[in-house]
Amino acid sequence: MVVLSSSLLSFVFCLLVTIFTSEASTDTEIQVHNTTQNYHYCCDFNHVRGNYTANSTYHTNLNTLLSTLTSNTEIEYGFYNSSQGENTDKVYAIGLCRGDIKPDECRNCLNGSRANLTELCPNQKEAIGWYEDEKCMLRYSDRSILDLMETGPAFYANNMDNATDLDQFNKDVNTLLGNLKNEAALGDSRLKYAVGNTSGPDNKLIYGLVQCTPDLSGSECFDCLSQSIERIPIDCCKDRKGGRVVRPSCNMRFETSFLFYGDTAYVSPTPPSSTTTNTTSEVKSNKATIIAIAIAVPVVVFFAVVLIFFFICIRMRKPGEKFEALTP
Ligand SMILES: *[C@@H]1O[C@H](CO)[C@@H](O)[C@H](O)[C@H]1NC(C)=O
Ligand SMILES: *[C@@H]1O[C@H](CO)[C@@H](O)[C@H](O)[C@H]1NC(C)=O
Ligand SMILES: *[C@@H]1O[C@H](CO)[C@@H](O)[C@H](O)[C@H]1NC(C)=O
Ligand SMILES: *[C@@H]1O[C@H](CO)[C@@H](O)[C@H](O)[C@H]1NC(C)=O
Ligand SMILES: *[C@@H]1O[C@H](CO)[C@@H](O)[C@H](O)[C@H]1NC(C)=O
Ligand SMILES: *[C@@H]1O[C@H](CO)[C@@H](O)[C@H](O)[C@H]1NC(C)=O
Ligand SMILES: *[C@@H]1O[C@H](CO)[C@@H](O)[C@H](O)[C@H]1NC(C)=O
Ligand SMILES: *[C@@H]1O[C@H](CO)[C@@H](O)[C@H](O)[C@H]1NC(C)=O
Ligand SMILES: *[C@@H]1O[C@H](CO)[C@@H](O)[C@H](O)[C@H]1NC(C)=O
Image 1: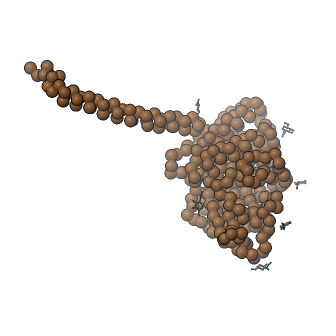
Image 2: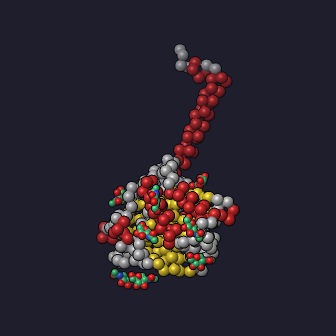
Image 3: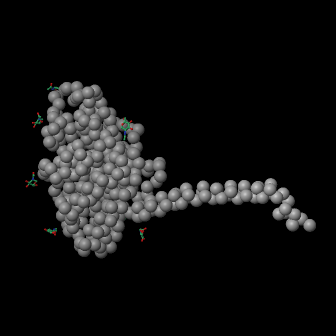
């Protein structure tokens, strides 16, 4: 699966979007990377965070942080955040695994990326890497990166093959990803992930996957994915059978006739978000049911109480009267 999909990557952009704002910016610096490996990374792309010196406190903190993060066996939902050190030597890190990746596989992936990233970005205070088709994402920085929606650096990739019946195809892709976006945004603080399929032209199944880092709010997740879906017709993968937009805070991918994800590894204990493409309507109808119940129950109880009081009053005010007729 991984091998197959890696061949689908055609070209890759490392696109710097303004770091501190949550909005996509046109003020971008584009780095072109070849997908020589089945991974993608960006070091301190804008040289804003700077370098640390070898064997400095920062270096030690980074090593400690990454080894703690990649050996954590308590987290089973694929999202890791941690920090280490004090003041200017403090390092922050985030690890995210795709929603279908089991905890042990997730740890292995993060551990591999750790070695890779520190080697590819030597002495850089900030770096981010995605490995094996976004199986995992690892990033670290000298600034706090938790609870922050960041859309850059991003990369886009697509399948070179064109789809058929393009109008219908593009519509289907848009509907599928839009539904998945809604579903993922409803996820909890552990998992914001949705996968699904829809039947496209020629009865070919189109598969979609979206995921946000679960520290985002629902609306941030929605916003991040909206920005990604918007890139499809612009510069990601218009008319293509497959494509992806990958950002620090969210990623999105679709492929035709090609399943590229497994069963969701972690099922959140809170209100289950199902994994079908019809979830928006399901969630809406679930909500409607809950609202209906929430309204109906008190109303019924209220009327029951009123009725009981009514009968009690009748009996008290006109004792016997109503029942006298019944007794001979
Ligand atoms: C990407 O790789 C191809 C050959 O595989 C090469 O021709 C091209 O120059 C490379 N592009 C960059 C930006 O490194
Ligand atoms: C940081 O190190 C890289 C190489 O490791 C170098 O290219 C870059 O100029 C350095 N940046 C600063 C601000 O010293
Ligand atoms: C850092 O420490 C390693 C071994 O702990 C040593 O090999 C290396 O030379 C040191 N680097 C610097 C710049 O001191
Ligand atoms: C993590 O990777 C390193 C090599 O970079 C390896 O020595 C170590 O055993 C790995 N740890 C785990 C828990 O897999
Ligand atoms: C990065 O990881 C890939 C596979 O995960 C490996 O083939 C490659 O050698 C690694 N590169 C570096 C520089 O560590
Ligand atoms: C896909 O369509 C584009 C134009 O829309 C064309 O340039 C490209 O060659 C096509 N790719 C294939 C594999 O047919
Ligand atoms: C981040 O880590 C801190 C401490 O390790 C933890 O208390 C917090 O719940 C984590 N936040 C998320 C969103 O995972
Ligand atoms: C497509 O999605 C439906 C739910 O909408 C699911 O039941 C079915 O198994 C999926 N098909 C494949 C091939 O994944
Ligand atoms: C999805 O919902 C639409 C309307 O809400 C319905 O017509 C369709 O049959 C549903 N598809 C599946 C697979 O449940």
